[in-house]
Image: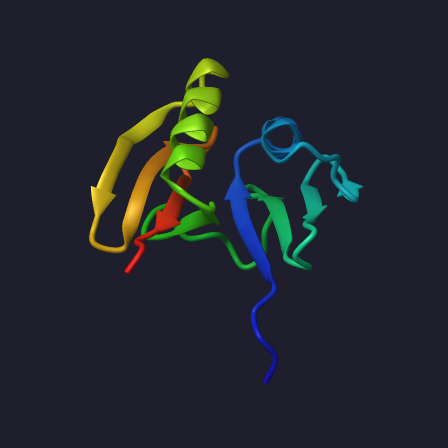
Length: 122
């Protein structure tokens, strides 16, 4: 069995969400249509944005998952938090020290959770 390398987020408007993620990731999608947008990330991971109105079988409600971004240290977490806040991205959690590391949580246009963290140093 291969490792997972693709995540799909079910979104209300793929084109709007595509613009949000293009700005957030600093890259253009590799595929774009009115119902689906796809990003190929440098790590080899793929991020797909699929219309929740056209996906088959129908999508389940949003919740219970996150897209996570690991950064090198707490300074980088704070810098990205300030950048995203200045862009008007809604925040669900301000930078906070937790057992696993230093983290904050933002929300995309469809309220998917975007967790940014620096792993705890042991």
